[in-house]
Length: 148
Image 1 (tube, one colour):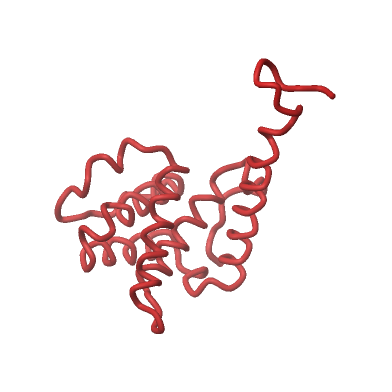
Image 2 (cartoon, rainbow, N blue to C red):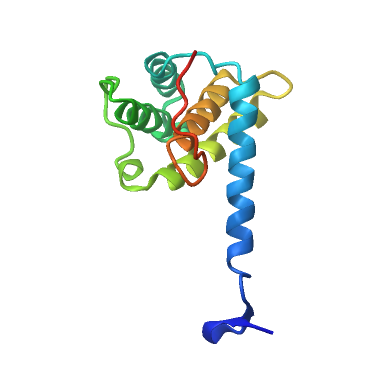
């Protein structure tokens, strides 16, 4: 049996969870782009919605919504949305994938807190994450999504 280096793990064992995560991310993006309620918003409109969510929910979002809006605008070559105060500076230092995990955890909390109702802030975060995922060629090889 072939192994990966000194760990003795079967060859390719470390790759399997990574491949599963990429497939899960692709499925999430496909679901959002086919049925997400904010899929047709322009990058600027989605950015404004994310900034508004950050204004209304503040510390509960921890800067995730504003940072998603900023990164989406940068990727689209558009001006970054304004925000009245600078949210948590730690959010600026994490990479895209870390930001997406952070934002999805916030979305889960908002969905749980809103149940049985729906959380518009959570839906906006999920669409922001899905759009940012489309800028990652490993996850979405067809290129960044643009609203119709």
